[in-house]
Structures are given as C-alpha cells and as structure tokens.
Length: 471
Image 1 (tube, rainbow, N blue to C red):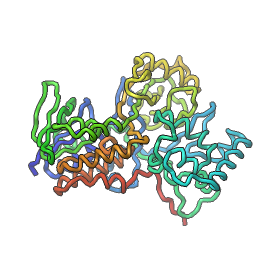
Image 2 (spheres, rainbow, N blue to C red):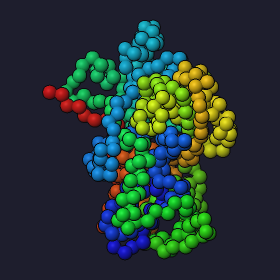
Image 3 (cartoon, helix red, strand yellow):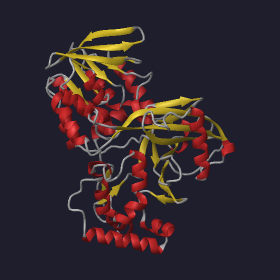
Image 4 (tube, helix red, strand yellow):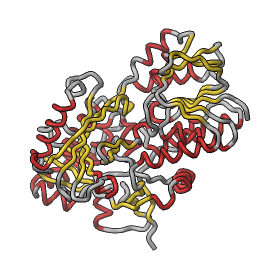
C-alpha cells in the first residue's frame, strides 16, 4: 500500500489504528500536538516519580485488545489487586458498595431508611430512564442515590444528575444494583456477575510504557510519528478530504491526503474543515461539551500512606474528586521506596477559577485537602507539580445526542474520514474500547470501505464486568 494515511492523535485509539496500518505496509503518519504519545493514558515523569493522568487499568473482555497488550509488553505487566473506597463524612466505604460495610458506617437507622427507599423504588420505579438520576434511583433507591451518587457525579461532570443522560450509567455501571450487591454478599450463585473487577494488569512503569513501546513498533514498520504538530486545516471537495495543513515549529505545512483517521475532539475536527461546514453543523459543535481536569501530584516522605489504589472523594467540603496512590499501582512508579506519590484529581472547566490557579496555589490546596481527609501530614510533603488535561470527558448532557447525530450525518458524506476514540466519537469509553475503534478504522481503510466504527462503538460497549461461572 502506498496511500498517505494520516492518524490525528497519538493516544490509545490513534496508535491502535496506526500499528496495523504500518504492519500492512501503508506507512501511516501519526500527528500528535504534544511532545509525547499516550494522550490521557500517557505517563508523566517529575524528578523520577511517574504519574498517570488518571488511573489506567489494563483490563478488557476483548481478546484482541488483551493480545495486543501482551504482544507489546508481555512480562512487563504486573497483576495488581484492586482496592478502591469512597471517602464520605470522614469515613471510608468500600466500592463497589458492600451492604455490611455501609451498615457499619451509616448505622442501623440510616441503613433501614436506605432499604425502605430501595423497596419504594422497586414498587414505584421511573418508567422511562432518561437521566442518570432516574437510572440510579431505580436500582438503588432515592436515599442511597443521594448519599453515594449525586455529590460525586455532579463534582465530576459539573452538571445536575437530572441533566446527565442515563446512557452514561448504562454504559459504565451496567448490572450494578443494590439487589446484586446483596445477592453476591449472601449467595455466590452460578453465573454470578463480578461487577467492577477485583484485579487488573498494569505496566511496570505506567501506561506510558505501553504507548512508547507501540510508538517504537510503528516506527520499526515504517510509520512516522510527528510530535509537537497541530492540525490547522482539513481541505475537502465535499466528498473527500484531499489535503491538510499542519502548524509546526517551522511554520505551516501542506500535505496530500488519501485517508484521515482522527481521535481529536470531533468538534475541533469539524471546525478545521475547509470549506466550512453548514451553519447548523457548526452550531452543533458548540453544543457538544467536555469536562476537563487537572492533577496535583505530591511527593510524600512516607513509605506507606494508605492501602487503596485510588479513593473516590464524595465529601462536599473538599474540591478534590479522586486521589490516586501510584505506588500501589506499581512500586516502580516511585524511584525511592521510602517515599510515596499521590495524584489528586480536580474536575473543572478549562479557564474557570480552579483551572487558572497557579501551580503553587494548587499544590497548597492539594496538601491542605489531603491533610483534612487524614491522608497525609503536611510536613511530609517534599515536592509537587501540576498537569492539566483539557477535554478529558465528553459530557452526556441534554443536548449531546441531537448534536452528535447532526455532526455524524455530516461527516458521513466524506468517504475517507474516520473518527475514533473517546473524543472522536464523543463517547466516554476506556482505553480498551478506544483501541477497538482504532483497530476497526484501520481495518476499514485496509479494506477500502467507509467508516464502520460508529456502529462498532454502540455494539461493543465498555463493560467492566466478567461472568464468574461457579459449578
């Protein structure tokens, strides 16, 4: 194959598309605007300490993804036990919720009220589950929804649970309910659903280890990666994209195109089309919204802080939403075993007050809130840094579905444009599902067919569960 194929975005979706293309001899060019690959799954390094941009477990029910990972890293994978808890009202609750643990921390009266609320929801459920609030209330009851779901969810997404669409819950926490939690605690049935995996694989030096290795493999097969390059224009004739313009350190560069596979935010992709799309399509791009986050990384002079891989922070008195304990993901994330490292994740909007705080003020905020929750002693914090991640989470708000359909129908007219991954499909998936959409796009290009990853995205949802067959 001699076609000039461009892959926009060097994250899991883009690299998973580029590798099979390179192996097929097409010599793809990967365009990445940052100085490293991995996207949200990259690993940052500060003074020898490694930090995820969020925690990235390597778990999948899809054999082709697991095979891809194993072929790239093999023995560099660690098998890690999962421990995650919820911090709420100065107490730690196991997640997934365990009824006896909830009973012990909330007390018998509140637990009875929660159970009564659950029974009421079973007798009088919402008939139509349009929102996250309705979906969760039907499965857990109003009182448990208010206790363990509303605050954290609204902290993450920045919108009301009455506006967040039910698709998010159906995609991410399918089959999780109070009933299944009770049954799994009391009776290990044949075919029990073990929702939210209890262990996962993880690269010894973080997820960036995987994506750097994939980059090397792509280059070995003749592909090219162009870092610090930004897409400026996609030029088309109404049916095909025929060229693109890159902004590089040496100035604009125009290149001929045979195919484009894009994992960049679909809103930005559409706005870069020349000639511009119709007004209704452009308007739809401004109705698709994203949630951003930043990570405050702290280096702590303690060998052990707490046993969790990560903690969900439901406590409304602090702004932090989640805390990662990277040494518990892999000991090699920390160069000095007498120390630990934390990543405090703050969900925000690019340009808001939190986003615009200086790194110094954010580090001070992270230390203060960690101490307030009893996770560390301020004097033990040796150093810190901050990483910002724009457009991290596509938001499933009240307008997204109609807007996405408008954009999708417009892009469908282009025979050689394929959108993939979390931002290319405006779908809140994990890296294994993003990889699947990239692999599918590569297959479409090799076979000379139009994009099929839109239907692929809906048919193969991300599910964090496995069937555990007991005999």
